[in-house]
Image 1 (cartoon, one colour):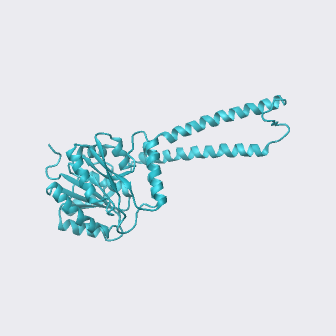
Image 2 (cartoon, helix red, strand yellow):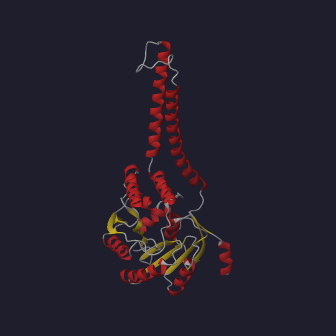
Image 3 (cartoon, helix red, strand yellow):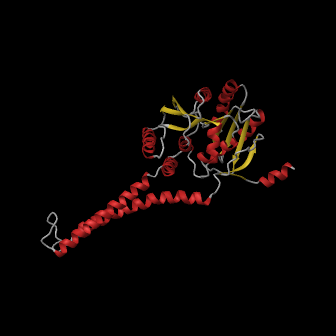
Length: 346
């Protein structure tokens, strides 16, 4: 028995200024979904505060094809909130997540869906064997995935982004999580269940440029580590313990040298040489470690503050194509102007 009578496969596509790529994506995606699901599909396009014609393209596409639905966010909330919003409305037995920039191949999405349904898997994620881009970015991506896999509290698939297909059971689990700072690929791997991988070579972006600059990539990396690893806090604890031991030993040495001048360490005597240089080096070293620890704790406190505020992940200002929420609707999404919409419907 399925959870939806009419939708076999939902595809969530976050969009931000994708007026060039979106029509080409739909041209490729619709026939593929039609063939693999016999028409039991839906596409949920989430406009993440675009400033170009993306919203108009979504509206026109929905008028031509009712199975194309749209969610218009009130502003640009970011890629991860847009993915979370789309998942909140997806009704399919399986839900795919892909970008609109044509770097996530449609045929790989179809293969992920088939693998998930035929092998009864809850998650099938696409692993990038190679990717286009600068050497620096490729090295940073590779380093990030290996770092997070080493420090995360659970296994983290290497080189696997958000591009994936998940089952209805997995989608329901993800929507029940109360946290507001959401990293989809991290939560997807955290739930466990039956997971599989599909390897592919990621093509170059056809239109436009990546919306992830170095600052956004850094923020995503920091949020991923802070959300799924306690190793930095443990390192801070170790630094604090080591600094305490070192400070105690230095204090004992200075006290012994003052009381017993004949006792020296490496010929150093406090009474003979004021040791200004040594004092500065010690203070600088300990101060830098203290500030490093404070910065690490600050990242965790920043995440805690966001969770305590309990603000919604995103605000849906409008829905296109008759899309409605259903049982299991996440509380982390806020719909704006519900009363105005209700009054217009009346």
